[in-house]
Image (tube, rainbow, N blue to C red; front, side):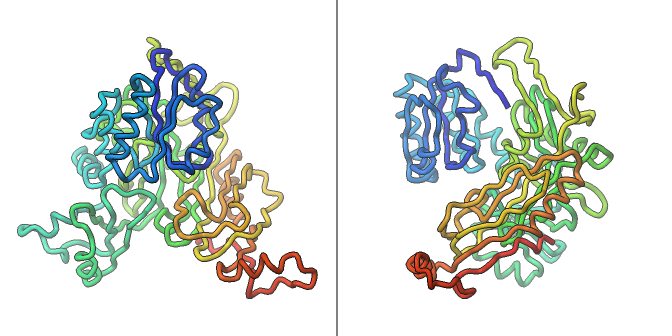
Length: 443
């Protein structure tokens, strides 16, 4: 993706929590032309690679919004004003909206962002537009005096934070007794519950300009984000053109209109239930878990300068009616596979699979990295990226990767012994110290 910003957008503040290649802003914004300041954690600041950075403010964390406002105020002073403030993480979208409001920076304000941030609000908007959503309720409403009893709702239920991401805090509840035991432990005003819909989960990623698709691509999850949070691999495969692909894009179009997305990226998740498609949730951002990098490698998207009168967009995309056809080539399929942390283990080594033509990138942790359960989608056992000609080719490559990958791990308690003895020729690696971890058990 190549974006040329208008020259009158000269002073930009980036809120960056990422310490991997998601922090490669220099690939997309010309730091020699624009004055770019960053608000980062220390690890995120170390990941920046731009040759010229106007100013950096470091925070220990982004959760302290008073400190965040003070950091942006310091950036405004250093830049002599702010023309744009950019936040790409789900966790900073609402804070960025409040910063737009506080500092009079152009951009989405809280009343717009809440439709893409609060799961109860977004589902109300989708249901009001006549689109299918799982039956849902804000937990605070379930405890009101005039609320219907929970036994009128079908189980299982999914209980989740209304403004969460990455399946953090999401729970499946199978019985009324389980629900009644869970309810007192939850902050009711911050949570919702929804009917569990059995079916495959898909996602549609794309970009809209003036409420119209510039690009939209539908993909199928292998396993779910919730299963990934519980220790199973998570994969994604772009769909081939066809009826299902078109049905998902046709569902996405009115969903975005119901939520009044005018300009920007989106990541929409949809359940294909036994009887119909159901809205799951949406973010006004690109998907995580390497969705963005996979989207970019399979789609050439070049936007004209912001502020130009033509607003023309050149794109080479697939043959869906929602995407303009390229006369020169067929768009590739792709997506990713992520293997979750092995909490309590230490990464020693890996044997990457050989002979998988569609596998184009493998990312592994640093040697001796300790998996502590805080890796999320970022610091995990392994991630793989794929590019191929068909949906079947990508799916087969993902299954082959799971079958053939091998990892050597140590228990945290045995790492010190391992490192002390590693140089001794008589030392033999024992199964009690190291284990060969196979990445199978996809389904």
